[in-house]
Length: 478
Image (cartoon, rainbow, N blue to C red; front, top):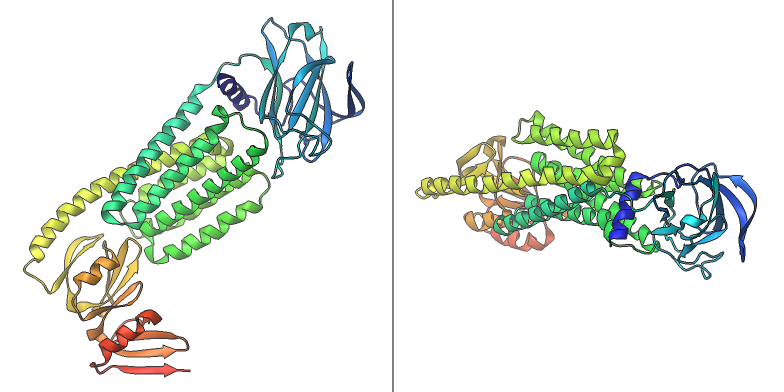
């Protein structure tokens, strides 16, 4: 385990496009022999080292160590590997081969010890044989590091500690929002719980390389999981912010984010996929937050400022954002919202008790908890109740509407018998009904004012029965 930790922290420090610290690589024709590898036709490698779908031999010249500290060859990437220094065999990671059948997959991270007797004064010839036939997805840069460096390398525990602390905080937040959802059955608490769980899983996936020296074929699946989790978090973020500040358009905005974030699968490179998925989600979530600021809704300014901070870090420091700051910012967003939800629960409970006490002697009124507080609305003025996620929209006489912090199912039991559920998201006041009309294959209920209401086929018979005794016209159009 400690060797894996040391190697991982080394790679975090020396991440490069698969180049030794003081070397340039050449691609050669090669074959292994009893006296070491035989190389010919060597030419410089202009870009990254890519053994995917083939067997390659590479060579470089590294300088002898300037001090007596032990040196090792660090190799990390999607490939099996075999190494020689000055013709002396250093070891193998898996078994490279010219075909998939000949190759045995190695570990994603490998350490090859170098004996002091192998070094020569001045330049030393380092040769690697690489092959990668079991990687699954194709990587733009399959080899993340090849370097000769001191051993052991001083560990950098701070990034790991930050990621694990953020994961623990997010997991606690997920539990808290789960409890709130069990109490109130609100959609936003469920979305926030899902966001916290997804961010926790991504922190674990990002840190897994530190604790588990997995075989290189698993790396593609690990990177795929990281991208999927980032995409899910982005869509959930858009969903939460849109429900908070533009509930009527939340479904449209969420669908738009789902399509755009899913399109990041077409981008080359998993780092680019992950970064763009998160960036698109944050940018789209900023739009409903800005709409909330314009409407002066509570919490909109703080949400917009935080999302802009997210966006600035993603654009200005993309590598740092995907590797570390994403978890910190996710925890910094979710944990304060948990505190706000707990405080709001307490305040709403107190306000509801006061309002119910006042409303006990007014059975003709509905106690409405809205963004402006608690008010008593005459039931006779309610035309319809339309579901809007965590809220319902009360459509009132005179064209006025209110958002009420309640669920449609709960209101269905509270309203008098003149109100009937005519759609999964609509309750109508039948005392205001004017006519039932069919246009093609769809039925609509027209009230004496306001927009017509949709009627589902499954609820049509109950509505017809309720309207039989009422002077309501039924109109059918071809």
